Image 1 (cartoon, rainbow, N blue to C red):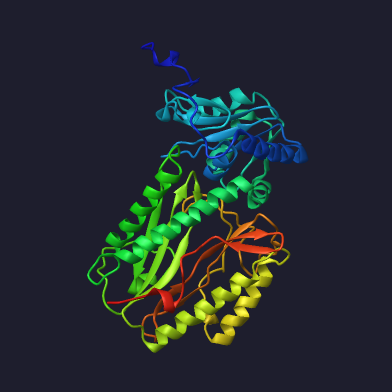
Image 2: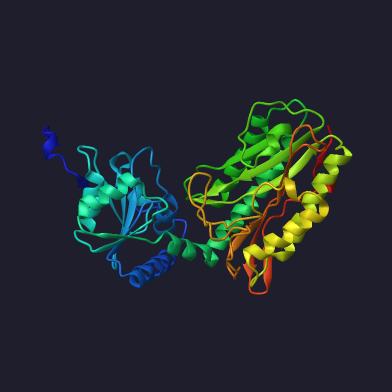
Amino acid sequence: MPNNMNQRPQTMRLYNGEKAALPFSSAEYEARLAGLRQIMNDNGLDAVILTSMHNVAYYTGFLYCAFGRPYAAVVTATDCTTVSAGIDAGQPWRRCYGENIIYTDWQRGNYYYAIKSLVPSAKRLGVENDHLTLAVRDALLDTYGTVALVDIAGATMAQRMVKSDAEIALITAGANTADIGGQAVKDAIRVGTREIDVAMAGRDAMEIEIARRFPDSEIRDSWVWFQSNINTDGAHNPVTCRELQSGDLLSLNTFPMISGYYTALERSLFLGEPDAATLKAWEANVAVHKRGLELIRPGVSCAEITHELNDLFAELGYLDYRSFGYGHSFGVLSHYYGREAGLELREDIDTVLEPNMVISMEPMITIPEGEAGAGGYREHDILVVKEDGAVNITAFPFGPEHNIIDA
């Protein structure tokens, strides 16, 4: 390498080792790219610059780790190339479908230089407005001069919402793994044990299972939120060092991550004998959960399901305690990237369910401290929509008859 910094390359290619086994077949990625290229044709685009973790992973198999650096996948009519930082060396090439180009740190702007080297000129570029910062948008405009940046985030989300058979198989394996983590969590619950210790038992069990099922995958990002007492009031409350006590309402939440695909299991439990108010609230949430499982089928809209479950909660006297929507899509998803917001069970979503969509049913109510039965109650199953109904791929039992634990 020359000593003169100005002679150092702005980009480079590094084919270090051999291509790794990806989560899906080449035919699967080609089908996804064909769908993206149809979006390009429909919008008259010269190329697409994908910048989100979820879309880069969906179309190329590469799940990047940003750490303050930008990444991309540049897709043209003929090529698909990931753009990665030099700090990752050859790993992005090994773990992506298609080509890879590395930008170096030797001078500012090399990321945009790399992108332009792949698409030297363009009149219309597809971008993800829901992920593009103002700084990146301005830099792209400076790089290309007169160019139209066209938002394709919604169109790519619509493509991702309908899963292939291969995706459904991976998601099903994830749901099975979540069940295993859930059992490990349940087995670790006892008076005096800390939330963090219980959570680690579930996480370890899931990572062991993922390594067994997917020995060629990268093992990363699986986690457990195990909450007790007041910590159950929010669905995404982090784990603490609180010690469990007899009389605690508990919330089990296991999240295995397989190649960027997160799945989930959530259950209410109780340590000791629940009082009447707790049992009543828990059973009400279970009743709504059971009805929700029945409602998920092709041809019904997200809003229709939501309104019917709202009516049931109102009848049971708990509608005012409902805290969020009743479910959401699963696929390339995590707690820090990805969201198929067009497939959520909320009043304002009119998407009609269709075969090969994957969606959760997860009602939750939160009763504030000081009221009888205080705490958060939730159950969570994942369903695959079929031609004539839906298949529940979650097996862990729910409700008081299964999840009251002796103190």
